[in-house]
Amino acid sequence: MFEILILLRAELEVDEIAEYYESLSNGLGTKFFNEYQDYVDTLNTFPFFEEKYSNVRILPLKKFPYTIHFTVDENLKIVSVQAVTSNYQDPNITRIKL
Image (cartoon, rainbow, N blue to C red; front, side, top):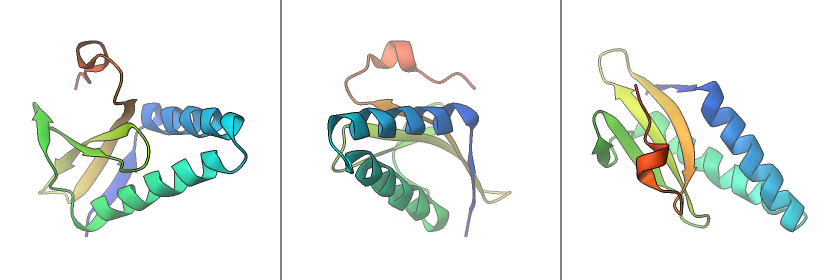
């Protein structure tokens, strides 16, 4: 099992996305948050998804056009969620610098 750390940036992004979807339709923000949380829970047991750049891995959500960006410290058994980005954003602009 891996410990999950969610950086403030990622928390703020998730809150903003959930608020946006809630403004579109009552309950849609909750559906987004629940899917995001389910995927984060998956990282607790299996964090070895695609390595996108440097040591940052990604896990795209299925029902919403967003991707979780995270790092894995295998020695300390820690997954750090760095960001949650829209799949429609320019990756050259949203690239995470560690």
